[in-house]
Image 1 (spheres, each protein chain N blue to C red):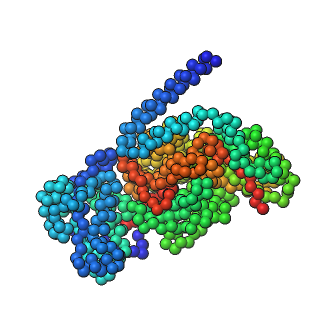
Image 2 (tube, one colour):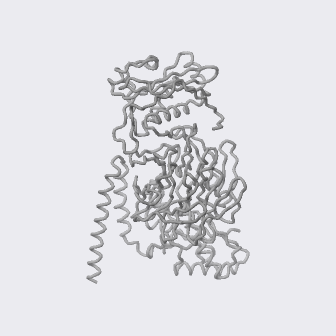
Image 3 (spheres, rainbow over the protein chains, first blue to last red):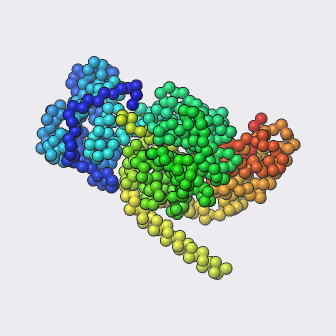
Length: 446
Length: 184
């Protein structure tokens, strides 16, 4: 990644070849692995220098809190109470007394050390298997001090990967729509934040309605719908430079945009004369291609990770259902056949599942099915919820939920939620304002 | 009469069974969520509202009342209403649109925006398309009655701009609309 805040990763020791502790993430984990996140130790001189820059009394403890929260929200780990720790952080990092840690039932231990060297923040950490009395992993990172939260997220990803065998999703961001004001005249702004809700930033001022932002594969660009000059069109925004441009020159509303997996195309709907069809536009040569041509509504397109197929939403059968087709628009097949109607299909980053919104008997469900439509599983049910977006490792879905309202507008809220693919670990994601249309970035450090 | 009554009763029993089994299976799926219980009580409320007759305000689920209706000109209503997921114009809608067309023919300098809207009970992207389809149904009808297409712009708001914030069938029926607005 060519990010401004460059990050140097030094591998101090090679990884151990076989994992001793194992966390099974394929089933609902009702028994999260107990582990101890020891506060990262810090020498007094570094502590004082970093306090001056970051206004945090002890940045070592702060980073360990980031790690602890990440591991906890994954639902797979149970970080133990720090008050029960017997060994001091600096000594534990050199050589843990494993008996002390197994006494408090920790199966894994995370220790670390923070230094301030040559205007840089240096963080090293070690992951220990307490029962086997063994070091599993040791890494060090050097970066600009303001990047300290990211270091916490990267450490969390490394631990998650080492203990579950799958990539993590903590060093990621969420793009979403921040909402304010009465339901009849809602003000909406594009906003971006870290996956844990920190570092929130608004990207538009709220002068025009904006909807459905989505990241490109490198997480540097966003495509979204804006009502700029009362003309609903798909736009492209460069997060770093703030440059915005309209996508294509369509004589009507374009909407429901997403990037292709290689980031070179935008796929979207174009509405004309009461019918909506799916189009792509190549961002390099600006060539527009029509993918579907049907008198029905065809919308919410999403590519398979290999770019060979597209799943989309169509009412060609009379009601909203989920379809798949080849990326050239051939071989259209309906895949949703359960009770109710289906919308917002999104292909999983692993390629094997499609997440969707289902509406049945006045309820809204977030669910998943296999790409042939079999194995439908509903993960959560509510009054109103929709628009799932996958975590980059395909283990968690983020979506938004709205509450019932009376005619005066009382009781209304829109919030972001996440749920594991297993159907467990449903969580509210705290945002500064009401929020909707979340989209998860790729893993930033990769 | 009696036959249909029996039929209705069995249907009710069947529906109750379906609801009950649905609840039973759900518990397995989400043991952890606290919101599930909240959601459950909400359905029963919605059910009650659907059964409660809303005298004179809805026909089928199309709004027929006058609350929220504005006027394009004297005696010319500005909006028409739709059934859930539909873009078919009702007899009353066609009457309103004919009045709009007649007024527009008399005022050839006026251009209009036909705004299409959906209720909140759908996914955002589909509702944008549905709003566009509804606005186009109104536009096509205006054109049939002599208003040239270059005087009409279509704009869909999907579910973004409800007139009634309520989460009731009556509020939703007011929100499923297309509104003809003067643009100049």
